[in-house]
Image 1 (tube, rainbow over the protein chains, first blue to last red):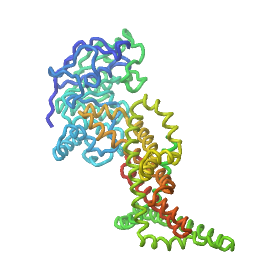
Image 2: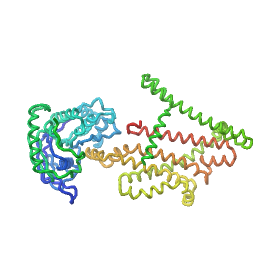
Image 3: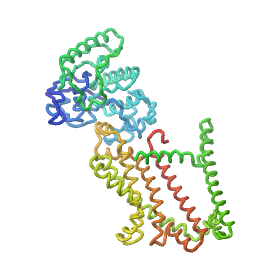
Image 4: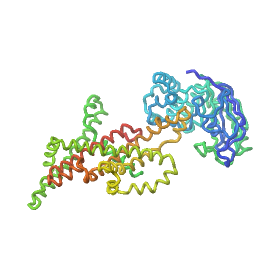
Length: 275
Length: 295
């Protein structure tokens, strides 16, 4: 599988759901290097999930633009795919059919599709489960199928909307590690939206802190840590403390009033820090 | 709707016990513990099937025996199971069973097909549009509760032939279960599936063929099964009048000819065909079901 990343350029991006509703976020500017993994941390209501939906082309911005290597994002595309909090697999299909569904939409023929699906299943360590019904898989395995379903499209950009928050700590840790290593190996960009500071430290190259209502990016930190990152590494711990401080400062200065972020599926979710 | 659903599940569970006998061979080849359990349960299913029906026939036989041993009702002896079973080969050799099944089957099939063609789109509309669902609720509930046979006088006036009138009665009886089941199926479709599919490049027709149809096929088939049950009940009385073919006509004909053995033979045939049709629906539902716990 050959995947390459893109340069992300977000300019003066603003959003409100209707002309009468308050501004979700206002004039967000952001650039990312090719292959960079970015984490956006924020409380519910700051519009981070809405921002991700706009990046995926699933929502339209009120103002401003998102460009990936000068291509304007204004509709969904398999080039920039999103993974959600729940895997949302199709329960009437086998694992391999779920993974190949995007290729099916694109009109691939059966044998080419099978090879590509097998590659993607290899990436997420599910090669032995190709013929299982997805309902027989555990939560973590289902989320891996969802990951393979996204990777099979060879996306330039993978968007993660708190995709591991419903999993147990052990499964979550292994998926966080695997997604980062796959992204680094294949070279595509990742944008993660999370309320979990640990997740940002373990997965991202750069962490952005979003707060306030309307939301705005108030701070950013480079996460210059070697791989593989382990939760108990002293550098990881130190980074987490710095990020937590930065987050608290931003959150105190720009409190978000209430949860108006309609795309945020689980509420209430506050910023959590795992001990 | 929920009630209807619960009932369907109940029926499914009951029908599962009466597993087909042909599966015994299959489990012989496997020969492990699980297949022994399977063999045991299917053997149980078959024996339940046979014993249950045997009890029914014994009660039938005994009731008629009591009636015919009374001198004043002696001539009702032909209502018993033995004359009925003897009459079936006679009717078969005459070809009346085959032609009755053909004409009734044609009416039933056409009526159901019309009901599906109208009911599924109505159900999709009910499931997708809140406005339509709210507006249509009271008229549909009212229409649904009209006994299908009470349309008969109107149908006879409106349609040129009795055949068309009967097809209309079957269609109007069976359109509601199909429509309501389709709507219920659509209500369970996760909106996130559409988001995921759009995200992966699905075209609008993909949403229909790859998501909506497989997602609701179970519920639509369940609705068709309910519709078939209602249609089967409506078919026979609808054929009492006007037509000179079909199962209902044959019963009426046997009654007028005072051939009670033929009459009971027809009753048995109607029950048996209905049972087979319903079991085929169950098989289809199981085949297309992706819900865990129904299999």
